Length: 304
Length: 304
Image (cartoon, rainbow over all chains, first blue to last red; front, side, top):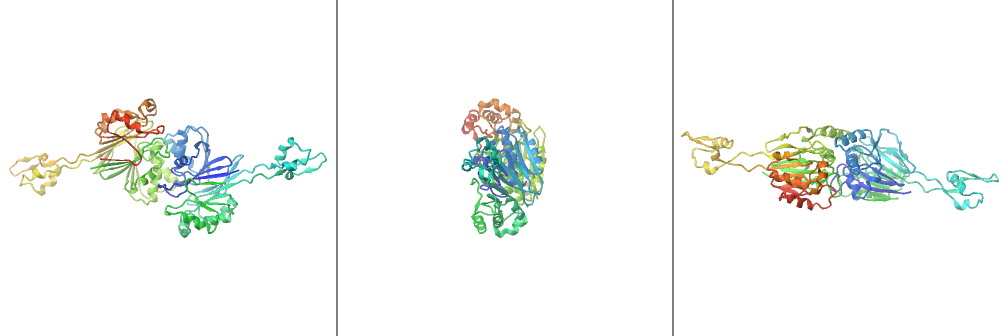
C-alpha cells in the first residue's frame, strides 16, 4: 500500500517560462492516474519520466484552459506512440464533444478506444472502482462546474494470525481461504473460534484528496476526512481573501483550515497566482494553522 | 525594409523536452505575424521575448496538432492579458468551429474580437494586404489541406532624384508629390521630362516564404520565386525519400532543390523528425545542392 504523487505543474492561469499549469501523476496501490492536463503536460511528463503507457485513466477537474488544454495533445501523442489500450477520461459534461472535434479536425484518429465518463452531478459519487482503488468525486465550488477527486486504496483482506492459528491443531491449510474471507471456524467439539482471533488487520488503506479549483468550501470535509495526503489549491496569500472570494479560489489559510478540520495528515498547496514571485510565504502562512504543509513544485514527489 | 524571423519551434510531431512544434514569429516591414502555433508556443514566445500585444494576425498552415494545438491557449492568454484589439486568424476551414468551441467550453470568452479567415482554395490567393505588406497562400501537398504563406513587402514609391531635379530651375517643391506619384513633368517650353529621370528606384521589397508541411512540390516554384528567405520543411534526411513520400513530407535534398530552382537567397530547414538526435547532417546534405542553407533552431533569428 503506497501513494506516490508527482507534481507536473502547479501554477494558475497561463503557462510561463517557469510556470506550468495544473497536472499531477498519481501512483496509488499499483494504479497510475493523471489528474488534470494543462498545456505542456506531455512535455512535463517526459521531463519527469512518467511512463505514457502506464496511464489508463485521466481525471479532469474542470474545463478551464489551465486544467485541460494539454489533453488533446497528449491523446494525439498516445496515437503517435501506437497506443492500443483503451483510455478512460473523466471530466465535466462537454469534454467529449470538444475533445473528439479536435481529434477529428486534426485527423488524429485514435486507434485506441477513448471512453469518456462525463460528470454533471453535484453530489459526491463513486466513478471508478477496481480491486485496488476506488475514486470518488469531491464537488467543489468554482466559477465553472468543478470536481476534485478522492483516490482511496481498497481495504485488503485481513491477514492470518499464524501464532493464534497454531494453537488449534485442528485448523489446517484447507481452512485458510475461508479464514481470510472472514469466516469463523467451528471445531469438532462444537466450539466456535471467532475470525477476529484467527486474523490480524491488514495495512491501513491510504487515500489522496485532490481539491482544485475551489473557494473555501466546508462541506467537502466529510468527504476528505482523514486524508493521508490532501492537495488543496491556494491561489492567493491570505490578504487577498476578497479576490479569492470574487474569483472562487482559496487562500493559504483557507486551505490550511480545510486540512485541519478534515484532520488530514499532510497538506500540499498549489495553483499559485502569477502575481507571486516568491511562494515561500504560502507555506509560512498555512503553517500558522496546519503545521504539516508543503508546497507543490514541478517535479516534486510526495510519497507515503 | 527588413525581415526578422524568430524560430519559436521547429520540430515535428510531439513536444518533447528539447523539441518544440512549429511556430515562427515574423517581423516584416514593421508588421508582426505569428505563423503556426503548436502546443507550448506561448511559453516559447515568453522565452524569446515576443511581444504578445504586437501580434494582430496569426497564420495557421494546417490543422495537424503540432501546428495548432497551442492556438487556443494563446487566445485565452490574450484574454487574461485584457487584450482589446481585434485579432485575425487565417487557416483551413474548420479552424473557426474548433477554436470557438474550445473557448466557449472553457468559458474563455474573448473580450476582443476574433476574425477568422477560413481557407479552402487550392490556388494561391491574396489573403492579406495593407500599405506595408501583402500575404499570399502557397498551396502545399500534405496529408491534410495545407497552405504555406508568402509574405512580401509592398513596393515603396520611387525616391526623388534631387541631383537631376536641381538641373531644372522650373521644377520646385510643389511638383514633388506628383513626381513621387510617378508623373512626368511638362516644362514651359513644352519639353516633357520623364519621371524615370527625376526619380530613383526605391529599396527592393523583401519577401519570406514559409512552406510547411509538404511533399516535394515543384509547382510552388513560380509562387516563391526569388524569395529572400525560404523556410522549407525537411522532416527527413535524404535516405528516407520513401518515408517522405508516404507521409507527404520532404527530405533535405528535396527542400534544397526547391530553393535552388526558385533561386531563393537563403534556405532555412526545419520540422525535423524525432528520430534524429543530431540535426547537423540536415545542413550538410542540403548544402550539397544549395549552399546558403541554415537550420531552424528554437530561439534562432534570421535577419535581412
